[in-house]
Amino acid sequence: MENQLKNLSRTMDKQISSTPVFTNTDEQNILLAIRNSSTKKVEKPKVKNTFVPRLLTAALFAGVIFTSYTLIDNYLTPETATEIEIKKPEIRYAQEFSQASSMISYDENTNILKINGSVKNTTEFNSEKFQTKIKILNEELQAAIGSKTIEIDETPKQGYLKPEEPFTFTKEITLEKPISESALKDALQIEVYTETKTLTSFIISDIKFTGKKAEEPVVDEEQPVVEENEKESEEKDSSSITEKEKPEQDTTDSVIEESPKPTDSLDNLEEQYGKKKTPFNSVEVTKKDGYFFIKGITIGTTLDQALRILGPYDKISEKELHAPIIATWNLETSLKEYQNPGLFVELSELKKDNKIGYLSYNTGDIAYIEKIVAQLGEPYKEGPNVKFFYSEKSRQMLIIKNEDSYYTVSLQFEPTLDPYKNETN
Image (tube, rainbow, N blue to C red; front, side, top):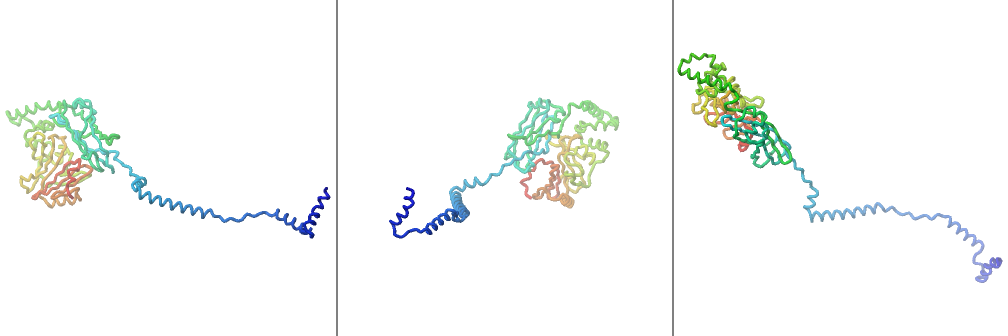
């Protein structure tokens, strides 16, 4: 069988063609070609890198779409887009106030307690709306007032303070019963507050106690002596009273206050202070350490200090209800009497420890006024025929006013500058 199969190709070749189709050489060539083709590695065709161009194309396409969307969105909803992009600034308020000049005054004769409070916004921001109250810390004063707290109804016009703006209030109370002077020491605390914080809190230390003090028995003991001496002066010769006794009686506050004749006080003061009364030839105006001085005295100088510097006054005004007492030192001047020549000092009471609250004098010396203005420099405010010079430290206002035929120079305390804001420079 095997032999028959081997001869089959030849038999078929003979039958298909009379001549052989594949020779032995052809067969070998074909087999060699097959072997060579199976051993060669087929190399893949090189493909160009197209990733970067495709990425750029995609980015360009996305940019066109985003730009178109932004333009359309801004066109359709500009307000909404603005609100999203712009941040609203944070609102800031003043965190604290500074204490300004504050004072307590009590008149034992009228039993009236007067409280003057003052604060200032020294920050760069507006404050919130605030309220003010007074806490009564002394039990004796609490009983006399009938409360531990006093609410202050006064507020700034707009309800808050702008930067560098002051706020001043006044509270007057008629006490239910008299109090001692010690009841006012560290007794009143001012508190300025908002809904969330306290802007300032301080105790008023400036106290003015006026009137006849019940706790000083020495005044009551000496009073009968004064009355007895007055009777003796009517019945007997005044020489019966020695010169040594007079100064001892007159040095008490009550004797000075109750002296019925100013001339009597003048004689006594000359002996006490060892100086003769005026007139003065001139009155100097100076400024030192933030304070204005007229003839060496200023706001807050006591009467005793003024008498030691100036000597005895020439005149005292009559004591009237709710009116200040005016002490006058005369000047040598060509001014007429109706033009009130002299240095004037205003006092609430004629007592040695009482402080001066106001000073003024009139002068016709124009050259000296020009010299004062040049020394003081630029005024705080200036109006028609008047110049205002202000000291922030002492809160004093020096005013020089042209009265046509003469000038008035006055010095006063100003806790707030509101009255001067309408003045034009």
